[in-house]
Each structure stands twice: as C-alpha cells, then as structure tokens.
Length: 459
Image (cartoon, rainbow, N blue to C red; front, side):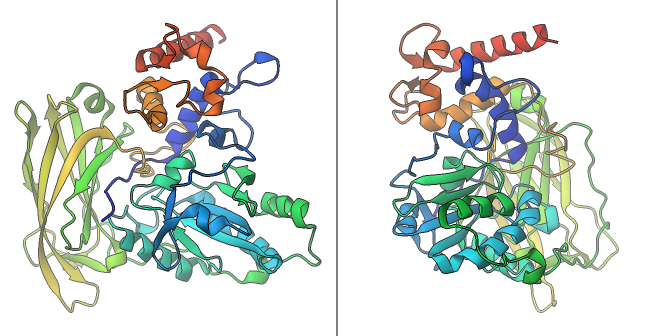
C-alpha cells in the first residue's frame, strides 16, 4: 500500500523559487536572478530541483502506468521521444493549456513521438468540487473523470500517492518535458504551452503540413460538477491565508466518502497556539451526499499531553434541506501544540449515494500533524489567494530548508557538497558560512536574512 503523503501547492513553488534562486542560480557577470518576484527564465525552477537539459531522471523514480501498474518512469521513456505534461482537474493552467497539447499530439504522435499526461496532487482542492485523494485508486478515478470531462486522447500516468514524481519535478503543477530515446531531457519548461511544445518538436522533427487547430478537436467545454444543493450550510470565512497541514487517514479498506481538510493559521504553525480549520468535504468521485434526516457529522479530537483544543468535539448543525453536499466546517482554538506531537481525530457520519439506493454509517480516524503539507494544494480564497500572495507566513527560511532536505540522502539534517544538486554546488561556498563543507538550517536562515536586508536597502 502506498504510504500516505500528499503535500504542496503551486503558489509556494513560485515563492520558494524566488527565494532560492537568490541562493542557487548565477547568471552572467556573477549577478543573481532576484528582484521583483521570480524573474528566472523557463526551466530555472526545474533546475532548482536538479533538472537540466541533457540530464536524466533518477533510475528508481516510479510512476503508475495506464494499466495501473507501478513501473520505473525511465522504462516508459526508452526508445522513443516522449512528451510528458503534468496536470490535474483543479489546475487552471493545465485546463487552459491542455487543448494546445492535444493538437500537437494529433500532429506528432504518428512520427514515433509518444505523449503522456502525469496526474498529480491537486493544485487547488475544491475547484470543480474535487478534493485530494487518499489512494491510488482514487487518483485513477480522477483520471477517468479527466478523460470524460476534458475529452483527452493522450494517455495518463499517475504519480504515486507519495508524490515522488512531482517532488522530482520541483513541485511544479503544470511542467512540460520532452525526453529523447535515451531518457535525456531535451526540452523543459515550468508551464506547459502547446505553442512552445510545437516549436520544440518542429526543431526536432520539422513542421507538419496543415497543423491541427484546437477548434478541429471539438473538445468539450470544461464545466463544474453538478451538485444537488449548494449554500445550505454557511461557510467559514477568513481574512488570513491559512496553511494546509499533514493529515494521515487510517487506510483500512473502508472508503473515505468524506475527506478531512486541516489548515491552520500562521501563528499556530509557528508557535503552537492559534486556530485550526477542520473541513469535511464529500468526495465527488464517490457520488454521495449528506442525508440530513439522520444525525449530522460529528468529530472528536484526542490531544497529546499539554495540548488544549477548544472545542475538542463537535457536530454539524441540523438543516431542513433533506440532502446537500456542502462541506461541514469547524474552527477550533489550539494552545501549546508541539510540532513533534500529533492529534488524533475520529469522525462519524452517514454517506448516501446520489440515487438514494443506500445510506451507510461510517466511522473513520485521522492523525493530524503540525507540519506544513507541501503537496496539500491551496484552496482559493482560504489557503491560496491570487496575485502571488498565498501564505506569506514569514517562515520563508523554514520553507526553503524543508525543500532543501529533499537532497539530504544521508539523513544527517545537512547538505554536503556531494549531496547538493549542480545549481547549489555553484553557490555552495557562499552558503557554507562556517566552511565546514556542509550547509545547515542556520546557514540557510542567515543567507535569507541577508537577502531580505539587501532587498530593503534596494527600495
């Protein structure tokens, strides 16, 4: 069974890239790419993940193929030029760009170029009603919806629930690659573009006569999922951008018709005291709704010693509407929650199928950790706000260090020269302040502090 870990959303990727580019990416004359947000050209965010033109993917990087078998990704790349585009059903960039990729596919698939989409953790949970999945089977259910709702002809691969491929790709939500028959990268960019993909393939294979237009494909219009009733239960509104944290459902073979979403204020994440949002969202792939004729959903929290949560238990309000699919949301106050302790949540609810053929009483459990969920995605208006303003928590050094720990293969909590990817090697001497041939978290904080000081002086 795949280990549960779903972490991240793309506003963080942009923000972290802007920070780490200062540290990692030199340009001509020894200057650095930094200033008004992320200014790097296409691919630099991918280079921060150690990917460069001419490089290959790790040999052990695994993916689920179209037959839902876990295989090495490199085995799918051998012997063919391969286009690989990441996306999901809640990523606006993918939904805007996939039609152009489909047009390119129609023109170049006959020239021994194979195409794949990679389905990944949701960029914006709750867009179009979708929520983060807990199992690989649920991820493939999303893929089936994508085929039906988007009319895609390109086959889909699935990132494991551990999100290892997305992590290797620098946690970008809609990246685009071309690999040569030896598995080496010959084209890559952070955001997929049918126009730029076509240009790259024309450079490799030459242009095609009478290229396919998007209008030729007659793709369906992308519309939100239908819902039985909306607006029955009042939503909780926040002026502060919340931060998703890790949850671990007890996967015991039962279906999680309802999925927990846990988010916290910046104060709670930094100090252990603040507010936590608990949202229980019906998963549309299971085609269920709330039955309001029975007891409403209820939760109960078990805290570690010394931690207080108020209220530690609760139930949703009774409503007159017979059925609906609105989320059931709660806001609790937390004090003295240590990051190395976890909170246990138990939840009880009834789930009914959309045709009212059955209703089931369900009891399920979660472990909640006070750790930022790097693949959790950002809910628009709650844990993501447009204009690049998502989650400005002030803990930039901590976020950057969490991302850097991907390269800590020895597990000693530091980055050695040998472990560092090539872009970091080029700036290693600047970051290794004490000259011990390692970069530690304190040195990261000092460098980002110096970066902030430089920005203030430049204003």
